[in-house]
Picture 1 (cartoon, rainbow, N blue to C red):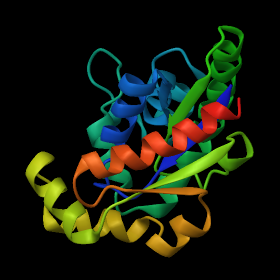
Picture 2: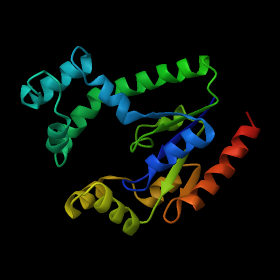
Picture 3: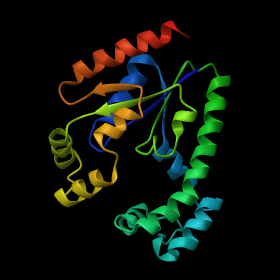
Picture 4: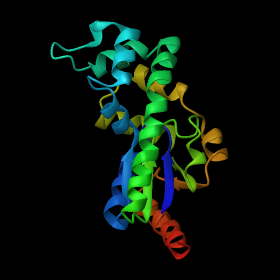
Length: 200
């Protein structure tokens, strides 16, 4: 099984790339945000520790966590964000490894995982290669305003917390330029996947 890690700044079009890899190449796609959400449910250790950290004010009446409220609390509070990361990230990595082993046994050839913090959390250690999905700041800004209706302040603050283009390029093995037409990006993806499949 060949494992590709997908990362890039907010608004770069990572979801579009994942959908293409899934549909065109039959890749098994794992979004680490989804793994995180699955961990933060009543009954898990991660849930218990998160409620201890934030208090029961982050819960809906049925006991489910209010993820929007949590996101708002940590948005400009780095110590609180670090506390949540320390609770969630080890579990995400453990579950990711379990799913990888499961897919390997099922005969999956192409395993793709995506996370904004793939580099910071050292997922290069369990991936064959990392891809950087690139789009310029103007393009990303436009996408976030039109598709997610983000405010300029939210976009600016989120981008400021992420790695720079230079850092992304330094720590990844392959760059998909998704600044223009997706047809161009798809051709780059196809070329790289064809090379990979020849070698496995």
